[in-house]
Length: 123
Length: 298
Image (cartoon, rainbow over all chains, first blue to last red; front, side, top):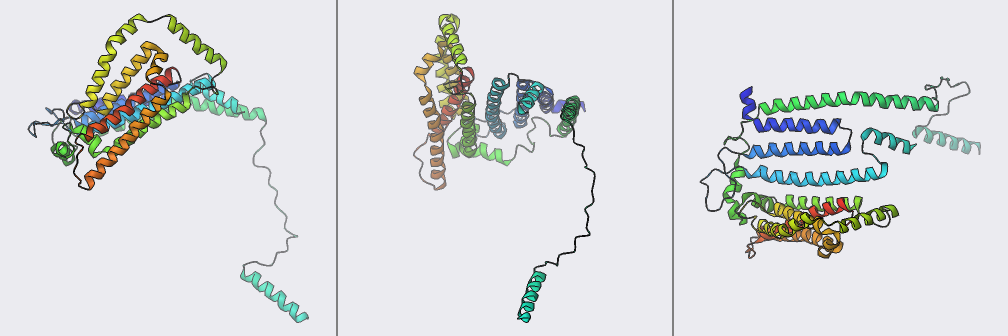
């Protein structure tokens, strides 16, 4: 059990981070904190992907003249992390802009108050 | 005469029968059952009270349900992680022939020693085109939401902004300005270095573009919006952004066309040019986010 955890330490850390982020996303009332929770989840995924591509004793996959002699780490997860970061940045910026507009319109970013105010405006 | 009428009636009844219509029943005896109304019509305040009650119940139960869902999710993920192959072992299933192929032939196929760059620009270039489009669209969406103009800004806000600007002009931040004066040339130099060396070292379009955007942000923060506009106003910004995306599309299309038809490739630095296009898009995105969030205009 403990050796399993130690062996997969990065994946376990990623899962814990993911849990922290997801709990934040679900339980926080403040919209900004929800976005922060979302970002923590993103980081957990990047950590998991980056750790999957690592090989013990591997070097960065810049081939050059060294040929196939040294052991290179897997380049594919690195590329996937790059894609993920781009999407995460875009989503974060878009949601922050939406939150700013919500604040300008309703004067609050607390979920509960926001629901009440929006309801009042509906009536 | 009467025979004709009889026949006409018969035909009518026949067609009605064929069409599936029956003769109407005698409905004089049928009386509809009268049910009492199923819902008692609530009064307005009753409805209001019930709605609030429901909302309160929801808010009471929501944290518990959310916590349970989170705990269950983490438990499932942890049990999954326990059965994953070990960290950093060479014969993990993820290190399969695909990565071997990239490592072995990447430099040969694309002319880029950095296999990650070769992969994201060469082999998976369509993916990167999609990423560039995502960034482009993100800036466009933030612009739609936050750009200030005459229609969505009130007099009060305009005066507030002007006051802030006047205050910023009168209190010049000496430390920030001096440090920026020293740092900005080096930041731009480093950005260009990273952009141009994406093929042979860690770096490339995304990282170089981000550094370039950071330099632009520092310039804008230290020397003010007015001076930034000399360097990059809205028209120039849009032009650079669109040019980057179009350049990427055209170059990558050309790259695929040349490669697929086995034409001689005279443009050896194709990956470098594509990287530069990505860098332009990323730098504009970074600076655009900063400008839109801090001032609402570019």
